Image 1 (cartoon, helix red, strand yellow):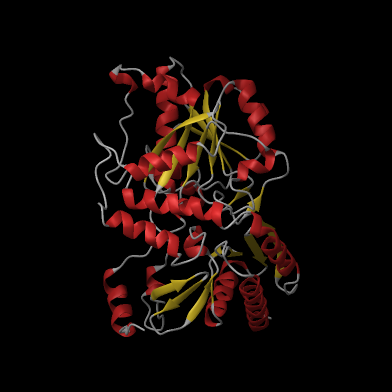
Image 2 (cartoon, rainbow, N blue to C red):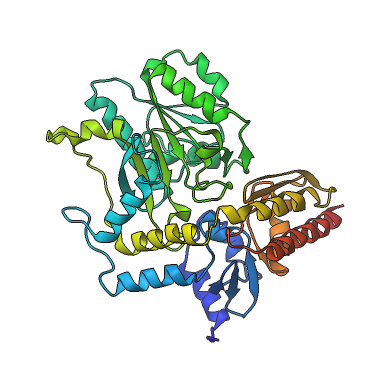
Length: 423
């Protein structure tokens, strides 16, 4: 086992690093010791002191097949021996070509035909907004309003944040957003007075993530698709969190049998290994961009677009889904998660819910209570996070039933301990 100087690493981290979504005053406090993660295998991760934890949030909702999966490791090494990265502006590469074909072939061929690569969920959404906005201009339409749902989260770059995160986290910046309208439900769309100006509706299908893992009422997606078709606008499905098995289906939109006009995939796309995002485009939307007219050029992209290592990892991940029957193996785990959440201590717990391999616990004590539950769980070997007063449990899909049951036991113990302290 490697030897790590944890004290020096923690000291240097506090001195030189700025962490996202983190109170740096609390992080850098003398009595706080950061967990320095140095290894992982399957659903487990290990810190620099040799302590092991169940990865209860899939390394921020990204990991699918577990850490150190031999097939993904081998795919990355094999590509690394060829070349790590080449420009996607003016050239292409085999992994990116193969992955685009594989992704498109997962969907009805009459519907989708093109993949646009970017770096993460936020940039995947940014690409979608830019594509849709330019699409309507090329069509000679004045549609420019985007509709998102209350409590939505679609990323943190300026355009993506304007859809939800800016309002949710208080980071609004004037002038850095697309024309936007927010609604609470599909029912409110019928009251939209200028539906002929709506460019697209954006939704996290089946479940909203950063809103606290809030599950949409049955039929929401179908009714939304019907409304978009009725008024002639587009539907964007943000499957950054829900894609690649997280809800029990390969993609969340499968639950209600609909297809959007654009999909956004990231997080689990590479199995949680490397940053890569895809904006999947329908034939209808791509059609005006195929002209030789310079106005049809999409002037948007990133330096690491189509990165060969990321695409190689994603190809290996898709192969694992096929070879290991990942989706088919989820049913007993989904049931164990649902059953375990229902059995959690009732005192201090307002509600529990699950959707596929996503679990949520609403605590009566608010955000500070949820934070304490996560801290106590960490001491007992479970890493997870909270969203305000909601503690989430989203382990890698490869997690075993026994590991899942142990994670639920730890959460139950943590809730009981924290509640007893505050009683």
